[in-house]
Image (cartoon, rainbow, N blue to C red; front, top):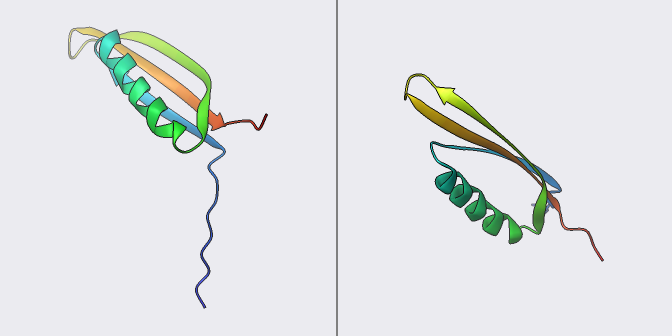
Length: 72
């Protein structure tokens, strides 16, 4: 007999990078929308900017921690 089991994702961490803030924000917002369907919401965001010597421009990065929506 085959067992079918669904587990809820309770925590999820995703990493994003882009060479401008507009594209970084777009990438994060797209993933926020996708994760809403999984009942996840943003718990925290960390970001950093570094200079990419190979590309000769700034590289913007973000780490977004998603957590399951709390039951109210």
